[in-house]
Image (cartoon, rainbow, N blue to C red):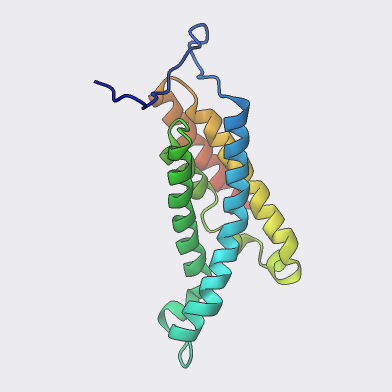
Length: 171
C-alpha cells in the first residue's frame, strides 16, 4: 500500500516506447548540477591539498601520499561530489541517478592530469573547462539513462564511457 502524501513518479507517455521523455526543468537541474560538480571538484581538491594533506602529511617528507597529493585529493573530491550529486538527483526524483553520476565520474576520472599547463597558467579556464565537461557528461548520461530498456541503456553508457576515456587518454 502506498502511504498518503507520497507521490510516485509515473510515466504518462505511452506513445514513445523507447525513451522516457524528460521535463525541461529536470534536464536543466541535471545540467546545472553537472556544472556545479565540475567547479566544485577542483576547488575541493585544492582546499583539501592546501589545508589538509600538505600541512598534515607533507611537512618533512615527500613519500607516500605526498608524491601524488594532487591526484589523491582530486580523486577523493570526485567521489565525495559524486555522492552528493547522487543524493540531490535522488531527492529530485531523477531517473537512475546513481548511474548518471558514476558514469560521469568514470568518464572524466583524473581529467586534471591531462591539462597541467592550463592549470598552471589559467585557473579560470581550467574551472570553466571542468564545469563544461561535467555539465555535458551529466546531460549525456541523463539522456542515456532515459531509455526504457535498462540493458540497452547500460550497454550504451558503458560504450560512451569507454569511448570518452579513450578520447581523453589519446589526447
